[in-house]
Length: 325
Image 1 (cartoon, helix red, strand yellow):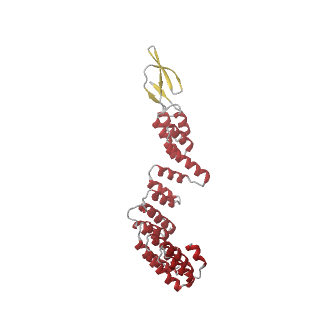
Image 2 (cartoon, one colour):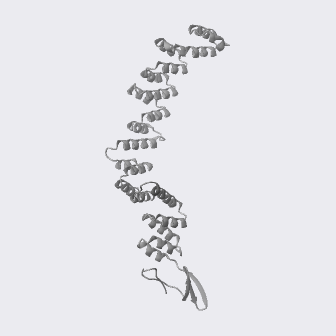
Image 3 (cartoon, one colour):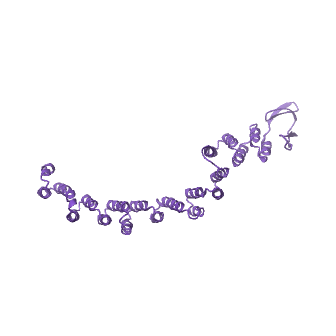
């Protein structure tokens, strides 16, 4: 019978065949009749005795004498829970647990660079193990409810995220709706993403989603509702309607802006001369914008005589030879 004692801890016994005649490190030398055998004695029991007393460094030194992979992992987990990061790192190196080593590196960097409370570190550890509810509670207790919200947003558990929004946190609510909308962008039905973006006040992004999914009806509906002072929004709506080949609807959006030049440019790009010239008649300053592209268009359609006449009307006779050769 072999009796093993570590420090002031109780003795634990292990049965062996033969007589113990010596030891070296974790090896016991036993003599049985005429044969000498070396038996490796695991130090697991001694290591766990130190762990129960939270003596992590002593537990690590004993573990170095010889313990199983499961023992090394248990030492790493217990040390990490107590924020003994040095011991935890050494233990996880032994079992090549890269995920835990990356987490320890993050915790060490945060401790060096910020005022990083121990409870926040424990919350990060809980989150890494998948105990998200416990992590969220700890984040919130330490005034970091926004981190709980972001965590559940990353998990796309938006109902959970709402539970940790602080009352009156309008900015947080807006950010949550935006994250929820972004997660819906790839869905077959973009309506949910559009509604969420609009609720979050992200009108330009909502317009982009409408345009990307060809929803010209919603685009013009929005153009009719917004104030004409929202010029950037109306220009974006007009851009998408033009891209979707909805020229009359794009023109309606631009008319609300009261920008005749932009309206003329739209008609010129679409080669809708019958619509462009009435605008120029109402706004003579735009006439010179039309004649040259109109003449070029006529020339391309072999209407050289008509193109020459247009140049004369515009007082641009000098351009006739350049354009018509």
